[in-house]
Length: 376
View 1 (cartoon, helix red, strand yellow):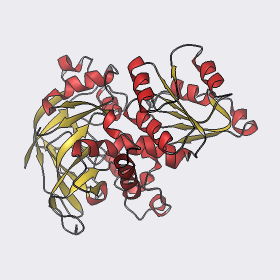
View 2: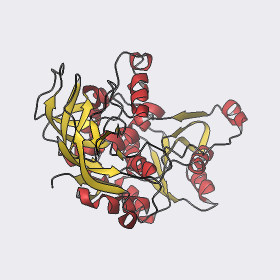
View 3: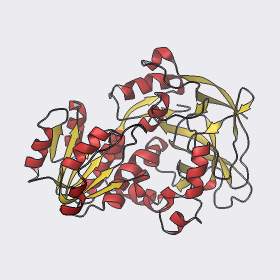
């Protein structure tokens, strides 16, 4: 079938993208779902910094490619062997389609699934196939999703069914921002009631982490960012303190606010400098969690003796260390109970034709989460 999509034809195009137009709205061919796969009509897809890092060249991918990994939609057709879904089901798309059988999956860590990592790196679906073609040539799927299109074919293990009462433009946010941010708090850091938390970087993932820390019962939640409007939103969401980054005094200010540092510092920016900041505001015996994906050229230099003499913990978190089949339902319940006001992350609704302008706003730091509505 022919499908309208935003195709990234080249990487490293200069901003503003509204002028350089790296994403071309055109038609691609989408083959039917194979065994164990699902055809989904994409209703809503979020613009994320992970997509932007491909556009600007920080994370190289083979071109051309259809980006988009945070999305929700409606099941249209089922491949052979898929018996637990029906056409019309509402689903959230998950960009780590865990196999369920490898060692990480058996340990309850599906985001580290070995076959999924290999498939995502190769640009295939979990079963090894490609269903997208552009100008007569097969092209890669982006992390098994490629949601900047009217339809997508995914592995059955890359979709999570939800009930139809949850608006799909909100449901899309759970596919990346919410799972990654809230999961980093409750799964990776394992924040306990009464502890203190700092969140460095207040994009969609960072603000989700802030909400997750409050929902987990943190007594002190410090929001850190360069942008005054994001700090104001953090206050509105319940941050107990805000610190403006960018000054030499920011670290000392945060340490003074928290009596020597926080129990948990979560870095959401995707830069070694921000991670160093997070490490320095973590108290002795505390945990620093890094969530942002920096360019592969960035390295971190730390005094190793801190890890031993101060019993520090430094952890990475991918997709919030989530088990999507377990955690999506939990996080949706928190949203419905008013404890995760995810709807406040949504700062713009776009048509597919406006995608380049949307990435300009994301690049300039003017948006939290913008959602593309495929057929508004």
